[in-house]
Amino acid sequence: MKTRHLGKTGIEIPPIVFGGNVFGWTLDEKESFQILDEAFEKGFTAIDTADSYSHWAQGNVGGESETILGKWMKERGNREKIMLATKVGSNPGHEGRDVSRNYILKAAEDSLRRLQTDHIDLYFTHWDNEYTPVEETLEAYQQLIKDGKVRHIGASNLSANRIRESLAAAEENGLPKYEVLQPEYSLMERKKFEDNYWEIAKEYELGVISYFSLASGFLTGKYRTKEDIQGSRSEIVEKYFSEKGLKILNTLDEISKAHGVSDAAVAIHWLMDRPDISAPIVSATKSSQLKAFEEAVELKLSGEEMARLNDVSR
Image 1 (cartoon, rainbow, N blue to C red):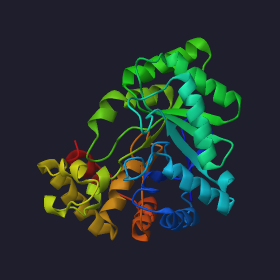
Image 2 (image 1 turned 135 degrees about the horizontal axis):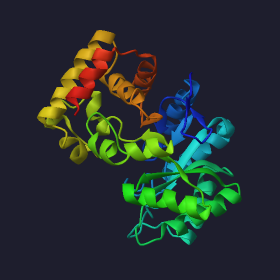
Image 3 (image 1 turned 60 degrees about the horizontal axis):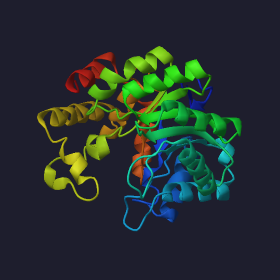
Image 4 (image 1 turned 45 degrees about the vertical axis):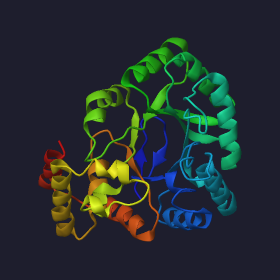
């Protein structure tokens, strides 16, 4: 599988990053191992998780996804073949988000223990706490990088101002720089990234791996009416039932039919083809969803088809 550069990190990744939020949530350990085996076999060897996944599931406290992933890598002996990304800052099970130096250093040790590895390839600030000076957060990462426990750092749900402040502080103080952004971005959610973060990514040559790539499943086309929505994502998906959302689905239907692929494949490919997007993050819980990954990678859309998707999603 042809790989892509992840910003200026020197890391090469597949064109789709596997989203590990499903491990310990919608998939138990055995099911997680099965889907991981299949994804690995197909060449999707970049995996994104977080210390907070999957604390929202009943009975969970956070760290379940990392624990399952760690067991899988240990049993398969494939850690060095995986580009491993995880996150810190959401402080699962407690009030408030924490990006203080002491918290990050402890949280990193906890993640390493759960993941059964000695290093994290890409460590994201998951959520921010703007009362913490950006220098303090970056100093924690500096220590982890010096100790060989983290190789590169990124930023997920930080404001554009805090990202710029962090990049400036890194330059001025000789601290590690964020090299990758992880924003929400999809055919349904374009404005926030394009208006606030796109210029930062271009200016600093940052890698970008986007999340909620299929708008919590809406862009797969499996939800055609509000009555179709069930389960944990109902409140999120319901907001997409608008004139715009239904027009996007109709356009996906037409293009996917013309190419004999799924709606999801077309939506993923649109992201893969967007300027400055390194790779979208996409989760899967069954083989048929992994097929959409392969379809997206192999798909070739015309300029006219891409223009139609751009226009309908504005």
